[in-house]
Length: 129
Image 1: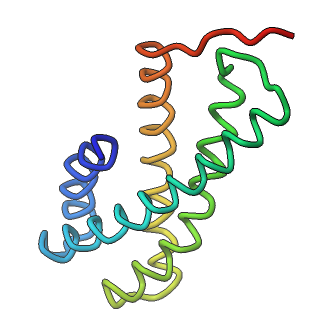
Image 2 (image 1 turned 135 degrees about the vertical axis):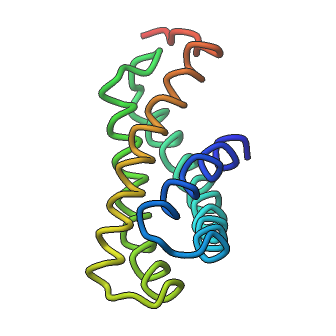
Image 3 (image 1 turned 90 degrees about the vertical axis):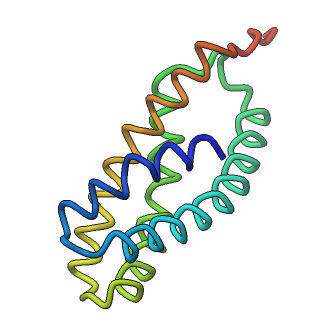
C-alpha cells in the first residue's frame, strides 16, 4: 500500500499539470489504476517468486532480475491502462497510449528505485548451491 500511496501522491499532480485534466478526474483515474496495479502486483509477484524459486536464481537479486521484474509488470499494466485511461478520460486510444506510456516510464523508474531500496533495507539471505 505504501508503494501505491506514494506513487499516487507523486503521479497525480504531475499528470494533472501535463494533461490539463481536472484533478478530480486524474485523481480518480490514478486511484483506479492503483487498485488494478495492486491486484496485478499480488498475482505477478506470486508468479515471479515461484518461478524464481523453481529456477534457483541468484540471491541477492541482481539488477538484471529487478529490471526484468519491473518491465514484465509494467508491460501488462500498459495494455490494461490504455483501455482504462481512454474510457476514463474520454480520449483516443493513441492519446491514452501516450499517457499510459508516461505512467509506465514513471513507474518503471519508481518501481526500480523503490524495490532496490527495499532490497537494501531487507536483504535476502544467499541460497546454498
